[in-house]
Image 1 (cartoon, rainbow, N blue to C red):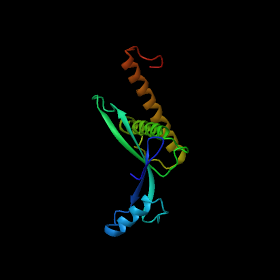
Image 2: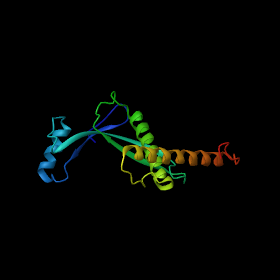
Image 3: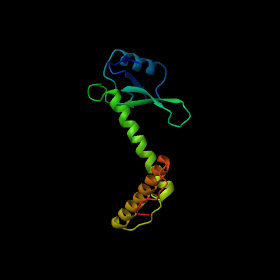
Image 4: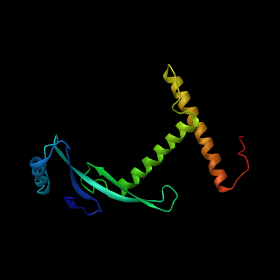
Length: 147
């Protein structure tokens, strides 16, 4: 850690792993002094650490460390970055589930129109399954009107 920042994040440096010994120490010293670094060798990063509560449903917490090259907290506050990353994670999970349950990635098409139709229908099927799952969790066991 080079310096704590006002939003709870901290400034750090990432150094090429091939650089070792005295050369690495020189880069660390230059970073600690705030000097301009050779971007081919090292880069300043801002580290945002945050807890994600009970992602796996076991009552535990998980610590995440998010690295960004947006160094100024006023450009992107730590809380906003953490929230966006969580939002992105939820969307990635959604696409992974759609691939596994609805064949989102099982396509062999020869035109953009066919690809678009496959993706649209796969996501429609996933939305229907998600709605049915949500109804089941709420205890609404009545089938939807369109079934």
